[in-house]
Every structure is written in C-alpha cells, then in structure tokens.
Image (cartoon, rainbow, N blue to C red; front, side, top):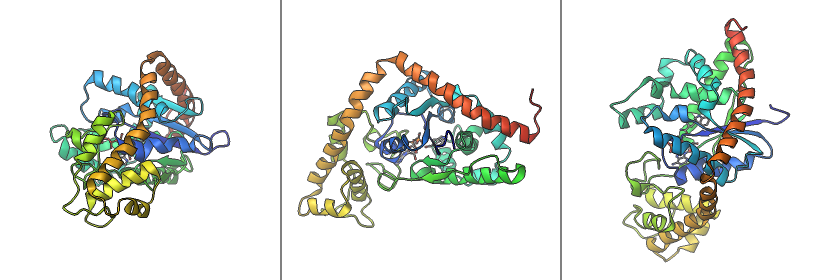
Length: 332
Ligand code: ATP
Ligand code: LTN
C-alpha cells in the first residue's frame, strides 16, 4: 500500500525496438491501472546489459521506451515512470536477494535456458541472476500487482518465493506480489515461426512487427505471415499461424474468435491477413504520432526521468533500509 492505494510495478527492457508483443502483452494494459493503483513503470536498463548492447543504441532506446510508455497512454503525472539505473536501490537489493535465491531455482528458468542458447558466447552471471534483480524491482515498492506477459510467469513465481522465504526468516518485510496476465494478447508469436514468441531481439525482421513500423511494412509483414495449407479462418489446434493472427486481431479489435470466424467465412487467408494488418496499423497510428512528438523533446523526457527517479528512490529507500536493518547491517 502506498498512500492508501495498492501498488503496481512493471518493466520493459530497452534491449531492442518494441514489438506488438510488448504492446499487447504489456504496455497497452499498463494505463488501466493508473487511477486505482499507485503505478511504477520502469525502463529496466540493468537487465538489458545481460545481453551485449551497443552503448549509443542502449541510450537511444532508453529514451524511446520511455516515450512509448507515454505515447501508449501513461501520463507521467499519474504514474511514476523511471529508469532502473537511476535508482541505485535496485542493484543493492538485487545483490542481497541473490543471497536468498538458490542456484537450483535459477537453473530451472526457461528464459535463462533460451537466452543461453541464443548467446552461447556470453552466458554471463547477470543472465543467470536476472530473476533476483527482477524480484528486487518488484519487492522494493511493496508491489501488489505485476502486469506482464505470460512468458514472465516463472520469474514472477520466483519473486514470490524469494519474498516468502525472506519474510519467513526475518518476519514480514515484503508484500508477496500477484501477477496480472492479460487475457488477449497473452503471448504474441513470431509471424515467421508461430511456435516461438515474437521477440524484439529476433534477427528476422519479417517475423516481428514493431510498434513504430510504418503502415506499408506492417501490411507487408502480415501478408507474408506463415499460416498453413488450409484456407479456413478458424481457431483450432495445429493452426498456430492462424491462431496467432486471430489473437492479434482479437487484441486490436476487441472481437471474439466466433465473430472473427463469421466475418471471414468463405474468404481466404489473404483477406484476413490484410484486415489484421489494417487493424494493427490503425491502432498504432496515434501512438506513433505521439511518439514522434515526444522523442523530439529530450529535455521533457529527461525531466520525466528525473522526477520519476526521485519519487521511486524515496519509496525504494524505505524498503531497502528495512532490509538492511533486518539483515544486521550497521546503519549510520
Ligand atoms: P527480449 O526479446 O529482449 O527478451 P522481450 O521482447 O521479451 O525482450 P521484455 O522487455 O523482456 O521484452 O518484455 C517486456 C514485456 O513485454 C513483458 O511483460 C513481457 O511479458 C511482454 N512481452 C514480450 N514479448 C511478448 C509477446 N510476444 N507476447 C506478449 N507479451 C510479450
Ligand atoms: N523480465 C521482464 C522485464 C522486467 C520486469 C521487472 C517486469 C524486469 N523487471 C519487474 C515486471 C516487473 C521481461 O519482461 N523480460
């Protein structure tokens, strides 16, 4: 609880251009909590360096991710928007929680296994302990609710386990957070390989629709999306490509699977793909316009970062001091 409101925390890595997976699975839903909850939305740059980044690009994407938060409807007056590395308490609590996270637990994380495979030449310790830093992000703010895509469920479970473990050893210290995983847009899959998650770090540009893609690119990518040899627009097992396109269309239009099936009865995949592309481009157009306005104003974005960091640091400090005292650190 913070000023009588429950707390929401979530984060997005500035590790690549944001995709419609990030938008539908996470950012789009963030603003629904702004009135009722005290919301912290963080650009998690410390997490991003678990994979090698080009410094100038990391810096640019940090501004861009913040601008996209705002463009997607997050009002900086109503939400605390900030950059993780601007609040040192994240790294500090991250270290402490490393000491309460087991090697075995971290070894079981599927994201670690996936990313180790993708970055075989750089399986660094940060990639391994990523989940305890994420737990620190969440637990620092006594978070009640964490809106994330379903791919983060395992990390969230671990954060709950770490909180419970710490509370058990040192008496109640952390709120044990709940996940909030949206119904539609749970997991958007790659357009080229519909059994794999659409990921901003995918090397195949055609597999991924970016929030900032222009309309032509969006339509082209959907036109090329992998489907199957059939022709019926129907949500069914084994039709991964069509199912994914239906999920995307559902998320952008609010229509149900039945409505979509009716709409495209007797029409082929071509028409359907075009409609998905149009719905996507139409929804993203105002977000893009607002993004373009914001990204040109670095001074404004920096003022948001500065205020956000100040307000986040104040809350984080309270939890960190409590943890330090409980652990037996000498506080001056
Ligand atoms: P990377 O590709 O670098 O691992 P990512 O695209 O998975 O990154 P993150 O910054 O790790 O993006 O995730 C930000 C948020 O977006 C998380 O809440 C995550 O669950 C959500 N998300 C990411 N990809 C998808 C997707 N394909 N479908 C639904 N939600 C997604
Ligand atoms: N690991 C998350 C990003 C993230 C996050 C968080 C999400 C870092 N810290 C705290 C929610 C709460 C991801 O989406 N890959």
